[in-house]
Length: 597
Ligand SMILES: Cc1ncc(C[n+]2csc(CCOP(=O)(O)OP(=O)(O)O)c2C)c(N)n1
Ligand SMILES: [Mg+2]
Image 1 (cartoon, rainbow, N blue to C red):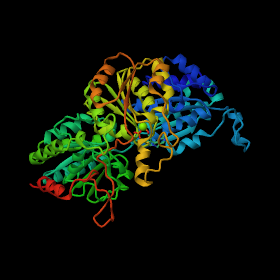
Image 2: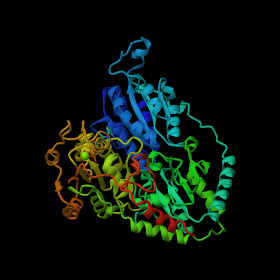
Image 3: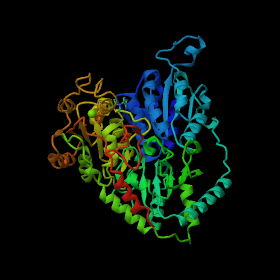
Image 4: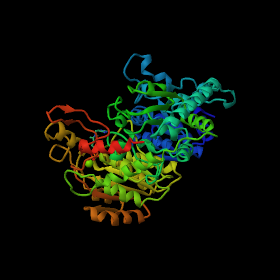
């Protein structure tokens, strides 16, 4: 066999069920072998899409995603997805072609010699866990095994193999190839350390009056969703999640209290600032969660923070932290073992208070400064109510739809919510739809995206048509970039530059776009029309574009922003009192009740 055939036989054995690709001469032998391998391949219309789709596939299934793109621009176009996978800890294998070994520019000290040649591995190295050019055909097994091991081991992430053309078609004997043998890790120390941490947590829980669990992506990555839920329910401990872990719990669950952070339901932030013990499971607690104020985050609480990446805990400028360096699944198992025949105090009063606060501050009743067009929180809620339990949910990775799709959308357990957090990039939704659709075994997909972000990778509407992907595309169409106009309102007295129709950004007619691709279309102009239009959209068998008339003034409230005090001095934002601000006295009263024993 040649190297290319070996690659796809290997991927078959790895149970890879989809490859996202855009073909090219630089990968001709790989493409040929892929075509003969029997592994389904999905042809996208941009390599950025291939990379994001592979990422979404891996996110959905928590297995390896694979992206195959050509040399030169193929690889550079795919870099965005690699960075996203790196920051979001998603295991993706990137395969690229390279010019043949004789043609390397580096041999001649020139910028380029081979056709479309570029040094993709140097570019990929800082954003992957392993990136190598396969220089010797006989090393292919070693590189593949090492790449897959690295992608899946510890904190997961992307890996990249670049294969020169003459290596791609080099003949090899598969039986005589050197393999990769990972170093045996001595786990006994780790186990006893976990047990110590579990005993310590038990001690904290015994003394706690107001414990809370914040579950992050680590829970999904180590597949201990039900263990976490069982633990919380058994001992009556309230839970919250990060956006990345949305749909880990049912939004309606009586122990679930939303998502704390910079933009969050008011109740979530009030509660996290009231707890006296916070157990953080697999979240890096980035600035979007701490609202750029780590010292003040859950400041009344002792914090047990579990993370597989020690640096993510060590970076925190937080008080009262007990770090647990390791896998969330192993930690929760140890905790369950330690607690086996033990009891904990009842946290009933605290849970009751949590429920009262959640009831008192429904997100949907937050007052917008200007009510115009469709209220995105209301639309998100209605869309989610019309979803099925096994729908795939793809949320915009930025701006209004990103926020609404996480905090106003009612996520159901069993669904899987996909968005890219670390990159916060426009243009991720359509590619994610493609990846998640294949990962789910071809389930219906519900997508929420902004009009501006929809323009990036719009070409993938054709991929949706080619593969008959039943996606309901809900577009919040505010004819511009609300994220940018709002920023310019706050910082530059409404001097708009590159953000709306008067400053260089216009949007196309969505109906004409739908017609061009032969996709059914419906428009929502007012809140009263939402329910009927959403129902119609859901009833259609195939893809639909549902165009929702939005406003550039629709704001992601409540959100933590700085304010001016009575003397005109700027006061920084606090998590427990996001804008629109509650009067200080009201907040004091809330905490008086919440903190009582
Ligand atoms: C690839 C990329 N380019 C630029 C940005 C900066 N940016 C963040 S949000 C945004 C506007 C998004 O517009 P739209 O999707 O219409 O959402 P809206 O803000 O109107 O809700 C821009 C330009 C980004 N996040 N990603
Ligand atoms: Mg917009």
